[in-house]
Image 1: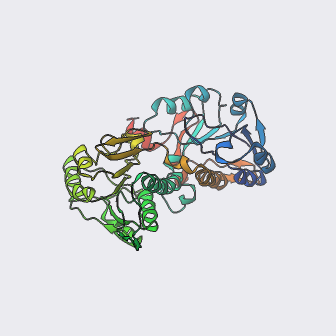
Image 2: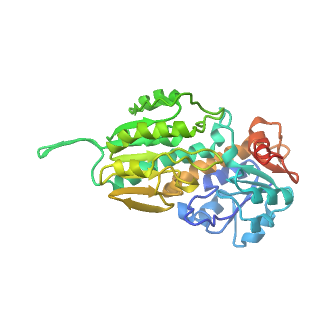
Image 3: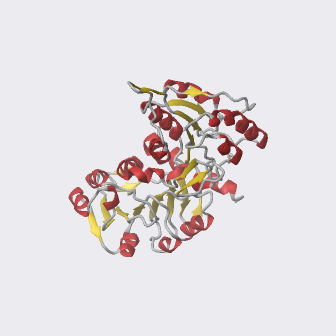
Length: 378
């Protein structure tokens, strides 16, 4: 089987789908790997590193893509490149299948087996392939560093002959993977941390990291079978905003991580809540790329509203692209190796397998994913 890895073309995307270490493991397992020249330069990997790992390096992007039995990427392909994929090829990347209907249709029409990394089930067996979690972990870390670098004071308490500096107050909204890492990072840097989540079940995790869980009575809430927070009603969102406003007004840093899979992010920090924050405060909106949690946030901009800085970075993991690439590459390697049979030299595409059933979107000319078919009424 020929695996090919084209370079990423999205603006500000510095991550790479395969690092040389994963190439070495795949070639050892009997797969051939070809990469586009310059693939890993923005993450610190040269063409020579890939050659040494056993890959061949190509300068012809179109020919590379057309030759692949399996194409690995970070970002979804453009429709013009879908036409280059050969029938029966396996395309693995982020695909945003809930929203990218035209892309999904073009992949099906091309006869491509499309695997969406967003759709890897959140099960124990699939943890090693869960790219959303691995990248969110890094995003949580980066958010705190961006906020700390913008804040006009230090995070830890400091006792000096000139007096004592009190610790900065950090409020994290959403205690999923990214939120928990943000809590842990802020705590390690010496901040006083509070956190809120609509799922009371995560309170113990927040407390285990040294944070204080803010309790707001929203009535009945919960999480999906995959561990995501359930969407709140308009009434619950209003109760949440009222409960959070006091905490925000007393915080130096606010970090929002609330995202709804396949849907626009909920607006949870409104203009009046931003106005209640003290001047010099910093807000980081992790969900800015899917609509934003914070009123006034803009993708890839830092907006100043009456002295409060709102940071909106659309691709947080790319700020630590070397580590982000290592983790994403490991997720892909674990996915490929899970279904690669070294003896028969085939990729075992069993659509009844619980992991593949969740993440395979198109196969053999058709849309086959039940979740996507349901939302499209097909």
